[in-house]
Image 1 (spheres, rainbow, N blue to C red):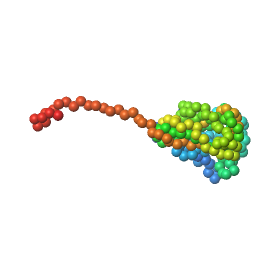
Image 2 (image 1 turned 180 degrees about the vertical axis):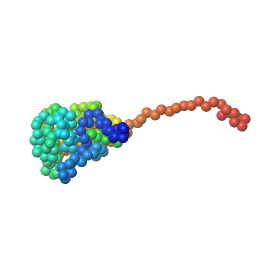
Image 3 (image 1 turned 135 degrees about the vertical axis):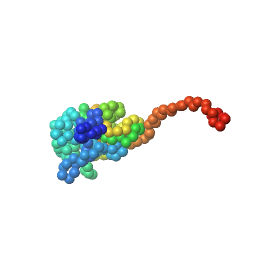
Image 4 (image 1 turned 30 degrees about the horizontal axis):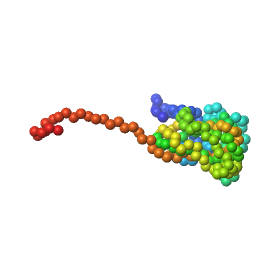
Length: 217
């Protein structure tokens, strides 16, 4: 919400959105500010941004100091590395870590959520919340055929198929649990799978009898 107050523009952040939404950085290293639309692929490395670099404990929780992957966002403690085929991924993911993104949900509907990951062992898990409300259970990230069989074997995996999201801008938070360093994360995608039917109120009116040309109606 951005109302005008005394001629000034104010902004009210959604619940649990403590940073600024970005979709990347330009050639000069400046953040490209934009809210993620969940109809598009959300790159895991594009979590919310804090220009004051006070993201720890507010925008993300990372259990190590510095960026062990040595790529992309060196001002944050989140571990990011370069993918051989192009782009970036999260690496050295530890149980207890989490990240926050500001996203726009286009309409109230049922959605599925999937991740693109590469696993080196079994036991890792993820969970998603929206607007401060848990929307998925803690879901194990699989290792071994037909799923990912190594930390460079990128596969897609559906985490949940039937989560209901409300229309509007809100926080998306991904939590990591289970075995640490079990998998790497490239991106995640939300896909609309069904429309939520809204309740409708029908009003009935009583029409009194009236005479019209000698008849009644």
